Image 1 (cartoon, one colour):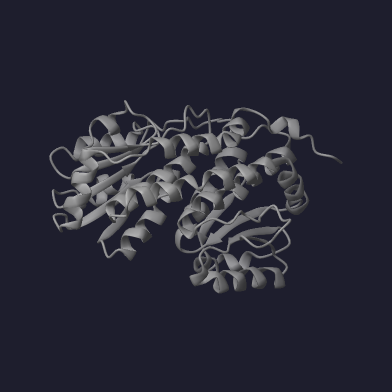
Image 2: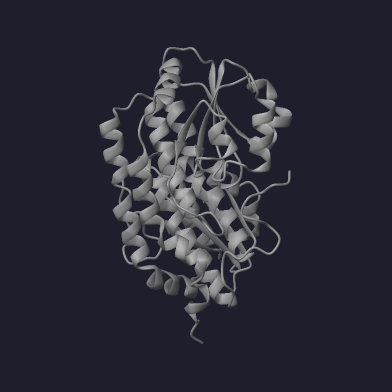
Length: 349
């Protein structure tokens, strides 16, 4: 029986299709500021002992690529959920630590608590979509996204945040501004190209999802951004049980759950670990699990993503997951991205 796709065309759907504009506007607005340049210079001069990356939800998962970029540059760095940082890892907050705090609203409960606790401790670089938020106003420097208003589940603010974090990483690692901006601009067209085929992609996915009861996402390295955020938005936008983890972790337990009712979305990711991810894909299918592979080669598949530079791959990888949210919602005849219990800004710890 044909599925009526008109049910999915609500506010969340509109925000999804608005992502190329959000990326373009964010890229146009990114520029070095004196406070940011000063903090980046102090970091490169060894004035900070470490960088602490923090956020919640998709803002937390989206920090994985920056974590790896700074690690590759031999900059001591740690990643902590803000909820853990403010209660169990407070010793990281001192004048020798540079904090990068990410929050799309800039006023979630944990971020407000962090600002209260951190008074006089660590300098903070804010990454937010809200210029007049407490986070932006009370930080030493701010990198702003320009995604516009977002009605429900994070999508255009998320990809814009990934773009802003790539910009920030380049600034901290002393990448020339002209080169950095050129690369960031190159993300817009591939996203627009993929989303232009949304209806075809969703229809193809519908045939692959019938009868599934468990859904896993797995990947390695920078793909952990899409893995973590993907599982989050699947649950939030469609109420479908989903779990994200590293490809290695999937073999340590969930592998035993494989059946024709189990769907595993595996991200090829960077070349360094593609062979390991491909082996997991083959092993899942050989054991009667249902698996799909997100890569830049599988032409004609809704899980094939456009070619981009490796540093922009996390932005593109989330797109097939977003299409999955539409397909799952269409299967159940509900509009995706409508909150029942949660709110756009989490105000309760």
